[in-house]
Image (cartoon, rainbow, N blue to C red; front, side, top):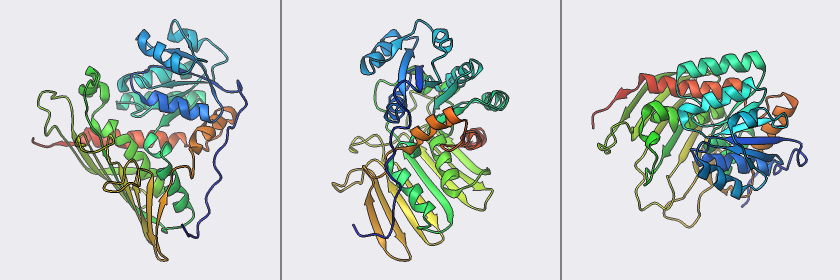
Length: 353
């Protein structure tokens, strides 16, 4: 396709084998596999795994044979060769795992939602400020989808001018066989805290904002009376410190007729054009996911981002841990996205079913 844009080179491994080792602790969410694959693809090595459920640890070790099954979390924390601890534990337990890793002198890499209470946020901010260790967050809908990475490159190249608004939609499918914690808001944090944290990350990143306030938010359980703790809908409107705004809508209403878990989309409005991301599917076509649509003052473009960008975040994170820099994501950004999700959740009006 003819277009005037140039893009970043595909990322490569940033460390030699055995130069950067990490461990996986807490395997309650399958995101741990994406987190692990991303780090391995950037050159890291996984050396340990631990979960209270021995079957989960065994399955992980079978997939990644370099990972030894630890007898306890403490065994991992006492290994000086471990640079980073990755966790996708139950959402309410992610901060405790990360904080124990930080106190043991490790950096932490935490699945979204990275924490579920304001007290955990305060503790994480205090620990990182005091120790200098990292509390990195896997906001995978931006960091681990090439369409989102490509959009970032287009925005940085001025393709749509100044970003004015980001509208981010995160539909999901409930499916079958969900664990009990999935339906307990004290454990998953509420829908705007859980799924919504992805979207607040995108809003802050694409607009370039560093702070914001929640103008309105709402949650509901519209259609799952048998699991009253589940919030199956949530939305929020945020006003940002640079004059831009954002809108989040998340839900558990993906119909069975869709071939993927959710038709995740992000629409980015700029002064000189707009971008739409069709991340996982382009319904009614054979295009597949990873579609990036761009309209600006010059023309209209469609990019199939698959294979175009790779996932630079993981290599940047590894180098940040080694070099003590902040190129992958600032700590302030990681916490601010989490804070906005907590604020939206806390302020949410509960809508009637």
